[in-house]
Image (cartoon, rainbow, N blue to C red; front, side, top):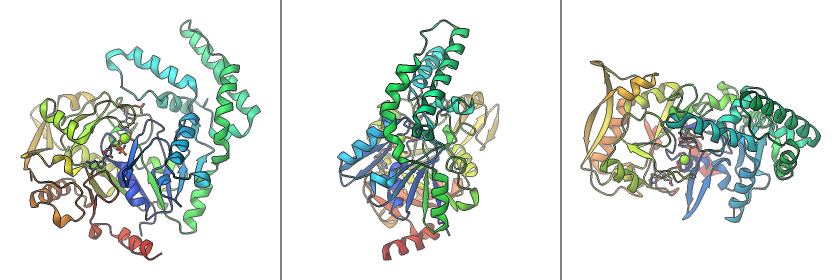
Length: 442
Ligand code: GDP
Ligand code: IMO
Ligand code: MG
C-alpha cells in the first residue's frame, strides 16, 4: 500500500506543490522536505488565509501534523525563524511539531555574497538564481567545509569550525584577487546569537522518520523546485543545486528507497519557468502575457514574472521516467478557461529528425522546433469545480489527452488555489483511496 509517497514538481517549479501537498497532507502524519531551501515558495490558501512557505514543510499549516526538515535541505536560520513567527502570527502553533535534521547544512552570510558575485561574473550567461545562497551552500557541502544544524548545539565547535572556513575562504579569495576579507569573529558572534534559536528543533530526523514509519505512521516527502531544475536531470547548468527529483527523497532524509511506495508528480495544465535557461514551449507575446496575467504567474517570493507557455509532452515523459510517476496531479486548469484553442507540445524536431525524448544538450533544446497538437478549448468556467463529471467535455478530453501522451493517470485536478477547489479522482488513487476512507473513520 502507498504508506509513504513523494510529491514532486514535474516541470520547472511552481506547479502548485504547496496546494497539492496541503490537500494530501490530511491523509499523512508527517510531511518532510528533502532538498532545496528558502529558494522555494509554496503557496497554500486555507479559507482565504494565504501562507507562502519557503523552508517549512507545507504540512505545518495543518494542526497535529509533524513537519520535518531533512538533511538534504539547506537552512538559513533567520529565514526559518522568521517563517515560524509568521505562521504563528497567523494563528498556527508550530511548537514541537517542527524537527530539523542535525545533518542539514546551514546557509551563512558568505554564501549569499558568493552567489551575487558569481552571478555578476557570469554576465549574460547568469542563471537567474533566487539569491538565497543555495548554490554556494551546496558547493561547500560537496567541498566538505559546510556547517550543519547539529553544530549549533555546541557553541565552541561552531566558532572553531566557522573560523576555519572563513580563514580558508579568505585564503582562496586573496590567492585569486584582493578583496575585502571576511571578518570571522564578529560574523560568527552575530550569526550564532540569532541562529542558536534553531537548536531546540534540531535532532536526528533519519532516526525519527524511520522509527515513525516502522510504527505505521505515514510520511509525505515534499519536493521543492521541479524535476527539470534537478542538478543531474534538469536543464543543466540552468538548474538548482540539489536533487529535486524523487531520488533526492532518500538521500535528503535518510529513508531507504524501499520504504517509499509511490511518487506523485505535480504539473500545471500549461507550463512556466522563472530564471534563465531554455523553455521550448514558451509562448512569447500576447498569448504568454495572457497566461501570466490570468495565472498570477509572478514568483511567490521574488515577485519575478514567470515565462509562460504550453504543456510539453517530451519534458513530461522525461519527468515520468525519472521519477517513475504513478499518478499525476494537474493544477490551474481554470487558467485555460478563456482559450478557443490550446496547443500541446507533442514532439521536438531538429535536423529533420523528430523525437520525443527530452535532450540533455542545451543547444538541442534551444534549437529544436516543437510540433504542437492543437486541442479545442472549452471556454467555460471550471474555477472551483470539485467533480470530474462537472468539467466541460472538452476539458475532460484535454486532460485525457495529456494522460494518454505521458502514460500516467491523472489522480487529482486542481481548479483553484483553495484547499477545497480540488477534483479527487478516487478511482486513480489506488491505495490512497483506502487511506482516505481510513483517515475519515479515525
Ligand atoms: P509551488 O512552488 O509548486 O508550491 O507553486 P507556487 O505556490 O509557487 O505557485 C502556484 C500558484 O498558483 C500559487 O499562487 C497558488 O495559490 C496558485 N494555484 C495553485 N493551484 C491553483 C489552481 O488550480 N488554480 C488557480 N487559479 N491557482 C492555483
Ligand atoms: P518552488 O519550490 C521555480 C530557479 C531559479 C533559477 C534556478 C536556480 O517554489 O517550485 P537557485 O536560487 O535555486 O540557485 O536558482 O532555479 N528556482 C525556482 N523556480 N520554483 C522554485 O521553487 C525555484 N527555486 C529555484 O529561478 O532559475
Ligand atoms: Mg513556488
